[in-house]
Image (cartoon, rainbow, N blue to C red; front, side):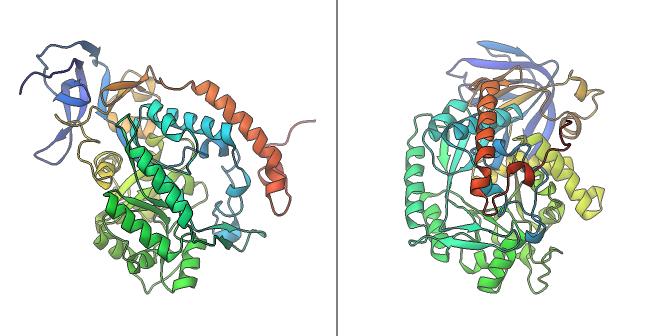
Length: 482
């Protein structure tokens, strides 16, 4: 191999490297040095003997590939902390989507602050590639580029909006054009993203939800994704309400309807995919959604945390994987912490299956790295291999939560979480130093999120069809002492 043409950074003497074994087609533990030049890895494992412009002591570090997050909502979710944690509508399948989420909204300053806070949290939990499902707002591309993340923008659009006035029935307000104008604006934004000077931003077509998008909009979205050579992601099979709404309209399950439309294929990512026909909450014995999903090649973006808060879970990650369904991991909610999502995926799978062997740590780590990368159509991220992108994180093995150290990934995922992650690199550029994302002042961003939360509380009763106050809907854990 010829010497690199750009300055080399070497992480020296790492006792644990999650390296890619190309012959075996899987991750494997190694040790030694990791080196990169520019945006590419030039050495993984063993001793790097070439010249180095920068050396980093890795003697107490786990070095692992950057995590690939295929489903996230940075624009709004940090605002919901402390409000939505224990809210769900019992008459609407325990979901919070219809009755509560529309009542707690942010504004321009809050949107920016939420995004900065979420991007910082994501980076600090080892995420290097992010699918950002937001609505178009001024400054989105600039914020994403500034973060240092490898971003996939997925500007959501739809042909109608859901609402509930009573907390037990959902209706839909449809636009006259069926979402055509909103889709056109989203596609224009994708063109701007593709031309962005950072070189780290790509796009994804994102009709928002299966029940808010007319048939024509979904078909046209899939065709546009094919023309552009990018994935399409749509929320589907995410709630009992949505399942029964699609069954009422079309006489079939959400997964079956996507298949009938001709859009269920390897280009399609289904956000959540929980309520298949055999989920006990919906009981649709005449279907076989799991086999249909597996045969189609479509992927599922699994985000366990937001659903487990409401007693809802995929049944189960291991069952889907054994059936041949492609799976990736996302952070649908706060905290934007991929390590916690992996932990919850593991625990929920065992709870739902009643089997500790339903899912192994390697299955979830694969889904959060090479699995997510493959779903995005990439083989140069999510792995530490010569020639791959220099996207990686370093975790401190001396951190108390990592000790006693026997198995580093288990200690990280089951116990330590993001706390030992000290350094993160994207394209060979350091974006987290000493555990802090370098692009943003997280404390300042959170101050602005808190101010936006107070404004949202003041506006809550006006938004609520029943005129309730925010603290009546979501009271504090304990009342205040007199």
